[in-house]
Length: 107
Image (cartoon, rainbow, N blue to C red; front, top):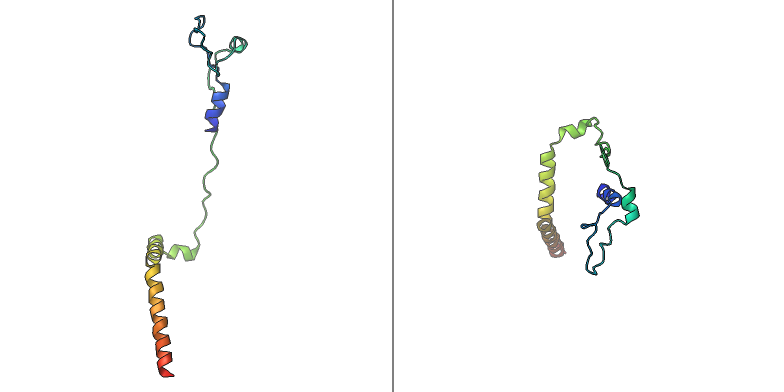
C-alpha cells in the first residue's frame, strides 16, 4: 500500500483535452498545472523498484522433549479441552455435591 501511495504522489495527471474549452466545468483537482507539465520527462527503466521484504523466520534446533510430542495429538487434546470445558465443570459440581451429601449423611 505504501508503494502505491508513493507512486500516486509522483504521478502527473494530464488534462484529457489539452486545448478544448470545458464549457465552464472546473478542471480535475489532481490535474497538473502548466508549469508542472513543462517539467515532466519520460522515465525509462525501473520507475519504483520493489524493495526486498524483511527476512523470514530463523531456523533453529528442536528441543529433545518437543520432538517426542506429536503436534497433531497436542492440537487434538486442546480442541477437546475447549469443547468439553462446560461438561467438565458440571461434572465437578455434581461430584462436589455428592461429597457434600455424603459428609452431611455421616454427621
